[in-house]
Structure formats: structure tokens, C-alpha cells
Image (cartoon, rainbow, N blue to C red; front, side):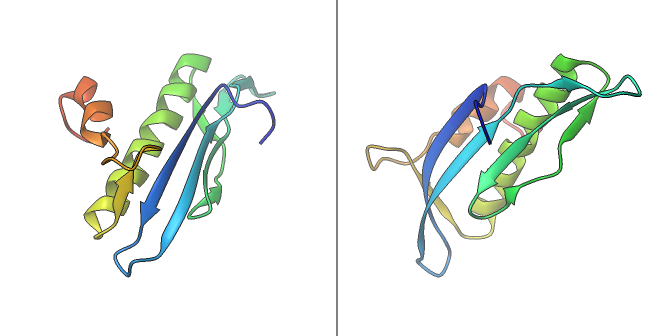
Length: 105
């Protein structure tokens, strides 16, 4: 993805112990011909480039793209995976979710 508007790098360790460097990228929302908005999202290498997330306006599509990333990271953890930040500490996923009442979007 070229020129993401937001990005994040996380070290992921699968339940089997395999280490992966996750690259999360969210692209610029764009207006589609029929009037809806779409936002590119990528969680690589686990999910790669996903289908663009659609919403009623640019804010909505961007919010849904961010929410999808949080759901995918939470799902990875709930399946036995672990997430770490760039300094080797536990990735603060709960902190990202706290603005949503501590629950996945």
C-alpha cells in the first residue's frame, strides 16, 4: 500500500511459536462512483491486503477499517497468539480498545 494514513508494526508470536513482524496499514478513504466511501486496509503477512472497507462517508469507512484491525489483532490473541511492541514489551491492545469500553468493536 502506498502512502498509508496510519500504520503500525507489531511483533506477533503464533500459538505454535512462530514469530512474525506484522505490518498494519490503513490507506486514504476514497469516494466511489456510486457515492459510498471505501478505505484500504492491510494486516500483513497474516491477512495481507484485505478488501477495502466501505462506509457511508470517509470518517465511517476509516473508523470501520480501524475497528477491523482491532478485531483481527484481538482474534489473533484469543487463538493463543501473543503481540509485542517494538521494545519487546506486551503490545497494549487493551489500551487501543479502551476507547471502545474495553471491548472489541
